Image (cartoon, rainbow, N blue to C red; front, top):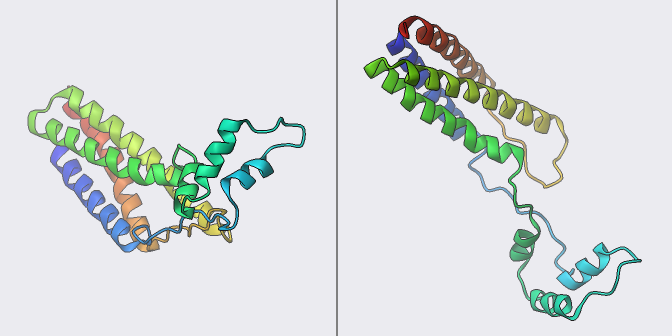
Length: 183
């Protein structure tokens, strides 16, 4: 049964890889739009409320140096440090699946119960991340346009069903295999 789960897990990974290759995720995403005429000094002045104190000399020198920055550098400086949810899920879902597949391969080869439960835990995390990613993409597709100008990812619906069905079967069989073969 562990070998069946391993083969099904590999099929699920292949379907997921096909989804990634055929989607629009690999295409270049536009950078956040910043007004070309606005300088950092004017942006900092506009961001301050009327009751705020005047900027210090150090802030003024820093703003004067920044006025020659290209728009891409200015956008990168003002971008948030934490990636957005969809980008994080785009990385975490396949990464957890690959690591879990490695643990399940170890369980299949040596039948160590700990490896089986770690593999099952990782398939559970992967399923949760995948459902969250699917929900985030579905919401983004329903919105007319995202504020960043980033298009919503588009996936082939048939392959989403194949990938999701294989993942559900992998989840159920991994739970059964970890319970039965772990004794």
